[in-house]
Image (cartoon, rainbow over all chains, first blue to last red; front, top):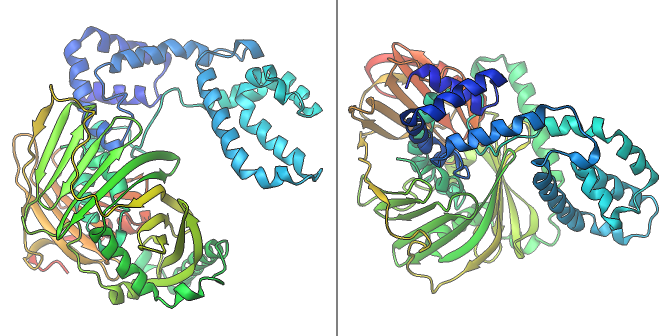
Length: 222
Length: 342
């Protein structure tokens, strides 16, 4: 496998390629089993060290890339009306909503308990902001109907408002990674360094339990 | 280069750094009712923490936040006389597991279907701390301060600030369990006063009955590849080296040095480890005969890296210190035949 292909695949995973370049690389990956295997193995160590969910490290890398490509038209397409948000948005938004509500419930509880007219709108505003990418779902939930009139305005603007955050959302989960690096070989080497380094960093006397947090990630390679 | 900055600039940065820190701490709790605990000095708290981490048996769950990345992990630590064992297990993503004991580190990687068993280089290596705890030395580079009290994982905690005296190292805010001095939460704070990473227990139990730890059984048995990486060769820290480190931050001393012989798959590598007693940074040397070395700054979580080429060698500095520190150290290294390191 040439360095060139490596870099292209890396760029692909980092969303830096044009649609046409993507298709080309995907084609090569699909056609050449050996190339795919080499790449998967190549990624394995660094993925493991990064503490990622194991997605890229699995042998189905090409499948994931293909899935990503399949999703591209939906992402690149012009904003659609509320009810036809791209399918991939829904689970993400749902999760975000659930999480933010749960956090809000804890964070905003003291305010909610205060019957202060000034407080409630603030809370509502936060809710709206958190839920922004998923107005469709919000609108269908009766309990959110008591949101203020402003909401209905936002519903109408929604295709504009939502399109931008949605377009910036990561299309795949990216875990702990080195910044500013698109070159897997360099990243891989840094990972090895980090492993060696950690063996000593974990021995620093005052760190207590601290250093082991990353340990699960990086002592994983070798 | 930071160390060469004129005094005005340097002071200014220090001032900003201090301001950021003070701002950070003012947000904390005013230590009113902590008076009783204050009788115990910060030094005593830290010493007890180090002691407890090694000599108590405990298990718990903690979250680890660095940048925007959040991980959940489970830890179990068993102390039995002078024997220690520890298991860390990732609760999200691949069910990775690391089991450490006095003489080995075992990594179980279900996603890679592999198990790595690494024997320690020295059988008498103390686990997990080989570096002597020296609070007085530490206080040359960090101000240690009792900041107040808090509640973490439903436990009472005292809050201790480990505040760097210069902007070349990170600061820490430790939340220690009042009862056992185990660190319930640790914030790593950069020179701007921003949090670089946070580790916080969501539950923690001290369990004296826990005396041995076995690997989790969910991995199944078959199909795993076993790997036995060869340890690198240790070199005396007082031995001559071909490198001079001209601008290490104050207090960073050479703690360890290793050489990994070249092989068909690996290049020969030299590794120098420096520490101020708290922060650690590593410097790596390899022949620069491919284009894969780092030649700029990079970062992962609280770890910064900077790479450059010196006299035909790829030199890479990696550590849990600010970006400016790894850059300064890397750029100040000189090739120098058979000289003492510091």
